Amino acid sequence: MRFIFLFYLLFASLFAKASDQSKLFGYSWWPHYQHPYFRLQLDTLNNQPVLGLDIIAPLKGVWGTLLPTYQLRGETNDITVRVKYKSKDVQHFYVTLNSLTNGARVARRDTIMLPASPNWAEATSQLHLKHADLLSVTLEATGKKDTLGTIQLADFGLYADGKKLSDDVPDAAVEPLFQRSDLLNWTFGNYENLPCMNSPILAVGETVHGTKTMNAVAMDIMKERILKHQCRLVLLELPMDAAFYINRYVRNDPRFKYSYISNYIDNSLLGEPTKAFIEWLKQYNATHDNSVSLLGFDTNLEWVQSQINLFNFFYTLNDGKKSPEMKKICEAVLYDMDPFSKRDVAALIDSSDVVKNCLQKDELMLVRKGVRLMQWFAKHRMRFGQRDTLMAQFVQFAIDSVFPKETVVTMYAHTGHLNYSQTIEPAHLNYYSAGHYLKEKYGENYRCIDIVTYQGATIVSDKYGAYAGSKLAAVPQRSIEYQLGQLGVDSVYLPMSKLQSSEALQMRMAGNGSLKVQFIYGYPQARVDGVLFVRNVDPVIKSERIIKEWQEGTKRMFKAYQEALGKMKAM
Image (cartoon, rainbow, N blue to C red):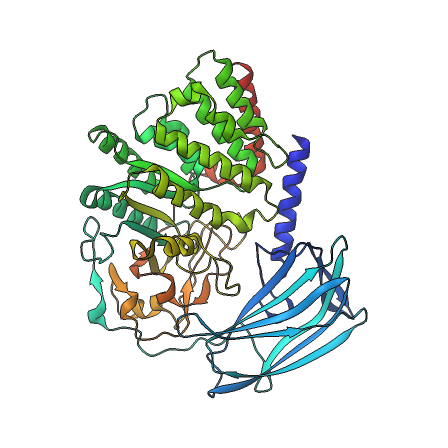
């Protein structure tokens, strides 16, 4: 256990280190989580920062930023790229620039090769580019086999009109994006005006984690989809392993207790509206042949937590019986789900007659698939970057292989996972969201809508993991939220087909860890079908005890692991 704990701390420290370079050379940088550099380090040269990038084959390293260029005048612009660097034992090192325009279309791609140089070298390149909204800029490198390649950057910049381009441009008004007559009204319990409510797969994305209001809207849409549109599968941004337990509860298995579910839904995404929905769904299922399933399509970054959740699921199924075979399963999920295990736990589950007798056929398929994905995820060296790939694979498996054809599905998660494009802003054009893969697979049968707001507060705060609560930042003028807010309207829906502009806009996209960066650039009509606007949002409310448990992080998790070990010994 000590080794696992130290490995987890190392992963956490490297992840935090990757986030420290946020304003290096004056730009906000995004690591490509599927193509990280082997190591990042920060040094100084003549009191100026120097970024060290280490790379080794077969890894490819990608580090990027997104620059607004819509403010540049003229139909064409001369762009100068300047780099001061040195490199050693690197196969390739280059800068890639993607010019984005008209609904996220890549109008042009340029690659600037930087030859190997053991001494400091300064490279300058001139580009004559047509006007574009955004410029995606990435530093990319590939390494040599069995050799640690090193790159050092002492300066990097893009210049136009004699000035260095910045990712922070002055806020300015834009022409009206829509007409008031384009807006559709909705109220709690009545969303029939929304053209997407009858979609076979409807994804509801929240643009801010940690608000009670967005949570309430999403849960209300879930109810309406169940009551009026025969939705039979609900998918939430919860770990698959945690939701197996919840699904048993909402399908009225008396062995699975509500008191234990709070361990899974006491997070910054879900609040009291979710708890109320779970109770409502349990009662609905009691009179409707347990016809609605509730599943999670996410996973834990900490594989230890997945082990704990799976153990508690099988332990509760066992119901205190003395079963050597079930004890063997419990031992496997508690010991052999880590990255270092070679055991195929999914195959073990599939071969167990006891497990087959405990689970329904559809449930067995989902658990087996979930376990297989969790083991793959735990072993992957770029684990975080595979999160949305895993999400999409589990959802596709559930829809295509488990539930009856034409099953109506409703999803709820952060818009970063559900939209049709990228998980973040388009700094990395090929870092796709789960929604991208689902849209690619199901076409018009998959629809995503965002819940957006003008103002309010969330339980998430500026300090990473503090959960002290914070007011939302003021919306920029170059946003749909701003123009909706200026109209003084509330509870309206705007279809993206009504947008009168295909230019890049700013959109709120605030996640779970910190509110330091709340807005990204993007193309709304390329990301979602429409936006549900609520003028004001209130924060999720959690007790001091719950917030303290969140902040304890691994301490709480390893305490739960020790408790699971004690339960297993008594089986």
